[in-house]
Length: 340
Ligand SMILES: [Zn+2]
Image (cartoon, rainbow, N blue to C red; front, side, top):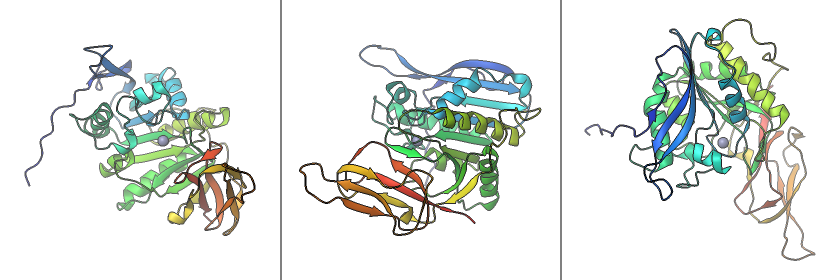
């Protein structure tokens, strides 16, 4: 089969990735619309470069309603100086910028879920064009890729950094070493329920050292989880030798991270009923196989028994549905097993 030749990306960066120093600019994506005939989506970007060396690509708000990464990276963009860097740091605090502006998981322009849009298309929707630019222009520049997620409006997590089991064991070891360096309260060997189209997969397929996170959720950021994000980013940059000098005083591992695993799809519990959820366990609490995780009460009338959802394995409650009402099909709980 002849290789498919893709059109160039329509995105124009206003920064020069090869120039030393600190540059603040945009990824400008043409987007013609009713209120701006020759308008563009302007995705903020910072490049901090100091000589040759490895490149870190740091992203937040891949999903627009997840805030720890955006806060940590907007903060890093205005505090990181070139003299502290050996190599290059590329910072995109709000990767799916239209979704971030709207405070929604997906883009209000095309309903695109950026983390299901990879590798993307240069001639596709706005979201597909963002994915394509990362796949073909930014990921190839990077050695280390960190994408900071949280639960968004509908999920809440114990704070963890994570990587995936990979076929290339050297790459897998690099990824888990970076997860350990992040030093979140929990570290996860993550199983994806739907890995097709993920940024993670695109980065891993290019051989990058890839770290992701889930830090809280509920459509907001908390002081605790924002501090974990800010500390973790600096820890990983320091681990990679890109952030030089002594580790910043706020950047040490606050506590020993606990390793969690998601050994099978039994970790996930999905609602088979709609209604009012009664949490029976809180995040981080230990559970045994058979323990009640949640009950769902029918809300159409009184006098009906709730349905019960139980743990399928031993572990801790690592994630839960956030809003009080659930629909059939919602992920209501994730149990992570504790590594001994
Ligand atoms: Zn996310």
